[in-house]
Every structure is written in structure tokens, then in C-alpha cells.
Amino acid sequence: MRILVINNYGQFNHLIRRAIRDKVETDLISNETPPEKIASDGLILGGGPTLDRAGRCADYLRELDMPILGICLGMQLMATTFGGKVAPGTIGGYAEVDVEVVRENEILKGLPPRFRTWASHADQVVELPREFEVLARSRVCEIEAMKHLKKPLYGVQWHPEVVHTENGQELLDNFIAICKR
Image (cartoon, rainbow, N blue to C red; front, side, top):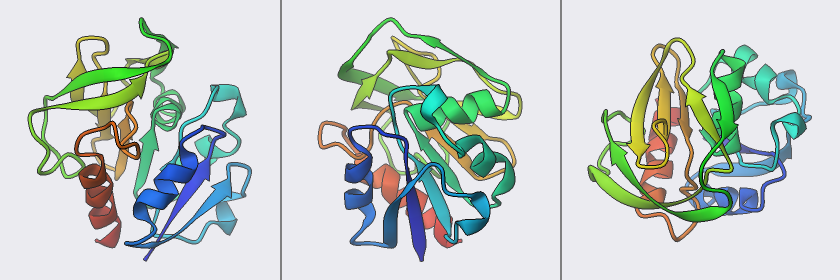
């Protein structure tokens, strides 16, 4: 079992790898890695500063047939790749955000209906892509988590890999379980 973390130059990408390394084989790889060179059971698109430094992430989303979890910028890349829209949010920088689950799903399995997260909303998904559904929202953002209706593609605006996020490890464990199927 191998899950790769795509480095989008975010300050927490190494923490994603650290959060899953005791449970699966993992590595942090460049977002310029050609899709055909990726051999894994799943991908996590890490966070980062800007969409224009996302390398080959849109290629991974379009070409690879495997579960993919987008975190923060990774979710925004997922949205724009499939026709959604991203715009500046009302909260810049990292802050505590209370998230409400609106649709339980395998990625949010076992999480409480409301929990505290650590997130940046300098940019956020403001228009859901076609064939996606909203899984969670907050008072600052209507699309805190989303999922493709047919493919195993998931996105969360918050950072499950940081200790400030409640139930973050559970979300990552859910993704590992999805990749094992």
C-alpha cells in the first residue's frame, strides 16, 4: 500500500507525509513528476501558495485512476480542473474554523457533525464543479469539503495534518481505507 503526497510548496506538506507514514508506504514528491511515473494506490495533493505553481496536478486529476485527496490548494486545483471557481476568501492567513458536515461520506466517516479545523481562506472554492457535491461548510465558506459524484476524488479546505484540526487523523485514516479498496 503506497500513498504519495504531492508537494505544492505549502508549509505543511511534510506534515501530511508524517501523519500517514506509520500506516502506509509514502513519499513526498515534486508536483512536476510526470503522471506515468506515479506508481501508488492514492495521491494527496498538498497545499501551497498559488494555483500557478501547481505543476502537473491537473494532469494527475484528469489522467490517473486512483483515489485523490486535495487539501487546501489541492482542493482548489481539483475545483478549477473540473470547471469550478476559486476566489479570495474573507479570512486571509490561518485561523480556527468550525466546520459543519452537511453530507456524511466515506471521507468524513465517523467525524462529528461539527468540529474545529485549522484553515486558510485566502483563496477558496466559491463555485462547485459539475459532478461534485458539498460535504461540509462553515460560516466563512459554503464549500469546506467536496467529493466527485462518481470518481474517488475528495477535497477539504482545512488542514487535517496539523494538530490544531480536530479529527484530522481520522480523516486521513478514512482516505487510507478508501485507497485500500
